[in-house]
Image (cartoon, rainbow, N blue to C red):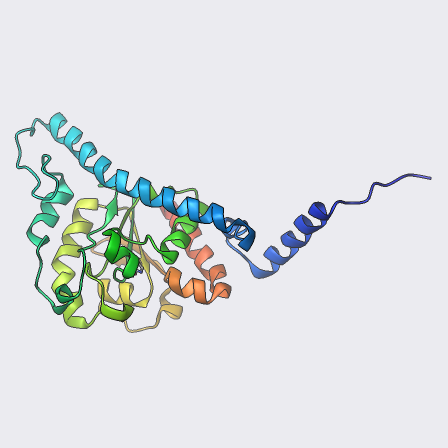
Length: 270
Ligand code: URA
């Protein structure tokens, strides 16, 4: 008689997880997201924030190198960092004490954005939340952790993209930004897109796509996954990570949108 060793509990659990994941259509990067790995997730979050903080500095260093190559070493100093101004510093400088809309009253910091400049992919959210307002960096809270994993699911490191929001100051109580607040920030957003010069823009949530392309009237459920254009740049709207945290079943759609972004970045079509 053939002796067959009994499967271990781990093997059975791994198989079961595979079946459940396939049923739920989870993002590949969501597969390890068990409560048992909470500490690991928290450590990962700290690493992300630290590397973001580094990438802000590195962005300046990169552009200094570009300026040296162009022979523009003696350019103006950034009023934000004291180092020679990077193209993004120059865009941001006139906004650093911005009081163009009422959001300035309650903010702790202005969250301009973070990441590489120029970058092939630019992500645009709605507005900073409490944690972003406290840290001065975009998407560093729970939504940010999911966003990082969404990018990783298409093999993109967060540090290689540029991330910003439609409005740069926190709307109190995480409400949607008002139209006048969006308009007050529009010129800055447009200048940021110009300097980042992305091949693809991915907008996160209804507010972001409506602010970027105000002529659209459909809801995010209809708009997501479509290939749209902003001044000739490809735009892919998807759900906001906060929505995905509340509605995990929508991750299936977000995963399709991410794959579209990957194809477009690789030079493919929609
Ligand atoms: N939600 C956003 O839209 N932007 C952030 O930076 C964080 C949460």
